[in-house]
Image (tube, rainbow, N blue to C red; front, side):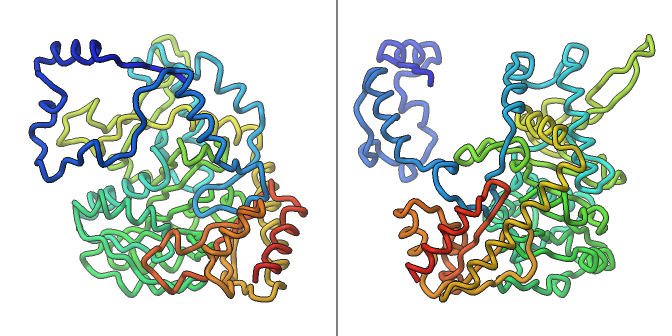
Length: 447
């Protein structure tokens, strides 16, 4: 890690350059009641590089990496094997140091891999056009809602109860400023009747499949119901590997697809950075956020790449921008592109089948344990079980035994007491038979 010390003289020089007498003067417009005094934080005193390095190393040692123990967490972030070739290639200097293609004539390599990335995303999602990536799945979902509100000129968005709660909160925080956000209620393992909530003010319905509890949803009747009322269907996918086996949202007549692409090419990384996938029908192209790379030929007839669509504030007037996205997750989408290229179509399908088989075998084992019942009837590589004890307590006990058992639903929905005994469990190609047996034995002992 880099160490950037800041002395009192450095601070004084910067304040003098800015033209203020103190750091507090920089925040004079902040109401006093909103200011939290420094004394309220338990922060260490200034320390040197060696001391800081040792302290942070001790803190990092408290983490349990996903590969260090049997690991069954999912709920929007999944542990998959990333080939060593991916990391090797993205660390080439021409990829690692490039930022964004403001000057297309000298950024042909960057534009080309973005173009290939867009092609992959369009094929995966079954849509006609995709952009050059967004930050992550939650912000891609939010941008999809804003886009639907612009297209339909309607204010209301209906979120499925099965949408990941973190995604729903992101939508409410941003898109809620532009209209009304309604969350449907759902019983885990069952599809709610979201179509009944659509009215003439509805811009879109947002449905995740597989949903946060692992349930696979049929989007076709929902698309038909939305279109009958002039609304759009936004399909959300948090586990993009599932598209190697399940029918693509575009083939189910989704209007916009927002995905989290972390599962391909990108590790868990303790929460990020990740990569948002965004695709739509061609007729909505002009309302799509972010950037779109296109292929063309130059004056000599040679193939070249350009920024075909750049509807963001850096390129056009603010009032005409469809988003204020500053960048895309460039290096992350390159990792996605390389990994998916290595897999190929057959490889992705095979990977998806392995994931489903691992999860099915694990579900069978856990269902045989007294005190465990399967909640999700149809799933890909993630499912929900009901325990005879609060799931958060069970997870804590198993963590002390060296097993990361999954994500308690109460962690995602802390204010919903009905989910306190639900545990969301994921299995991928990295889950071994020994891992599955260890979880099964541990649950049998605890329950």
